[in-house]
Amino acid sequence: MALQPIVTLENVAKAYGTFTALHNINLEIGAGEFVTLLGPSGCGKTTTLRLIGGFETADSGRITLAGADVTQQPPYRRDINTVFQDYALFPHMTVAENVAYGLTVRANRKPPEERARRVREALSLVGLADKADRMPQQLSGGQRQRIAMARALAREPKVLLLDEPLSALDVKLREAMQVELKHLHQKLGITFLMVTHDQQEALVLSNRIAVMKGGHIAQIGSPSELYDRPATPYVADFIGAANLVPATFLGSEGGFARIRLPDGAMLSGVAVGSGEKLREGQAALIAIRPERLRIGESRHGLPLTATVVDQLFHGGRFQLELRFDQVETPVFIDVHRSSVADDGAVPQPGSRVPLSVAAPDVMVYAAEAAA
View 1: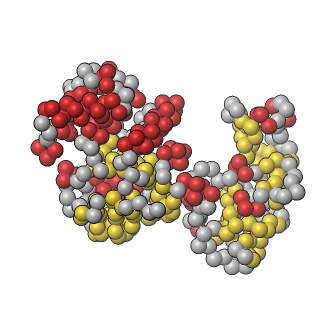
View 2: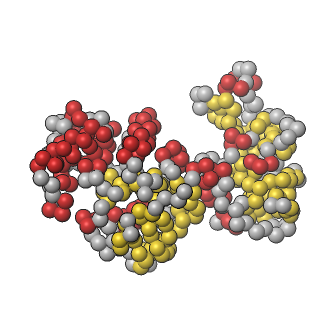
């Protein structure tokens, strides 16, 4: 069942001088969803977040919150709060005073008893009720991140905006905070909208992901939809890892394609990217996830052959860099150590190896779609 929209963007555009940051964006975010705007620097994701928060004004289009037009309203008039990348805590205030700050300003001022209750509840939600009297500089990076979250939640907003909230944390703490953030969203049931360039973070946390490119939404869908059926090579390469290999499209039947690789290998029964209309003989790209490739021949897989260029050790797995004949683009495959008798059994640089991949795990796109 479709969720009732809580945030809607209709043909929203924004330019800075001669640079257009957003091109007529249309986006609906359902009440209670966790939606992530994902993309590289300059793609428009932060601009979109700032427009929704009221920190920027759209040049054209309409933004609604719970059905009300907020396009021209300032941030304090919107039932939205933001967790910033640098947390923006006041160093001269205690933890409790930082959390209470948003409840003391004129537009959202609450009586002292109400403020105290909300501060206690917000700190309890993030597991820091015992740190109320500490100063921010006495806390770790992960604790400061949670204080910033508590301050945003104390106002009980309809929508919580997260501007790369975990980017300042080290890898292990970042992974731990991802779990906490997901649990917090499930517990509260309010709408979260996050901006990140970290694809793994988006996959772990989101109900839906909007992949952005050049001020447009390239594709929006659930993590599994984007991962398993990316609409373009760009989305395939940005959501997870993807091996992109040039090929020639030879035709299709029943929605499945036949292609030829530069070394002459013929593959049939592969899936055509959504919306793609390719012509016979047209230059194409195939996309294969590294985990879908298998070393060795298979009766049920499409046969390939490649040369090992390098072997990278990742602890629990090896990553092999391969090259297909007459293809400069590297191809990567993961070999888990549990799947080989010993490390010496892993193919060495310079060796030729047979590969196989199931036809449904190969996607084909027009080569120009990668531009």
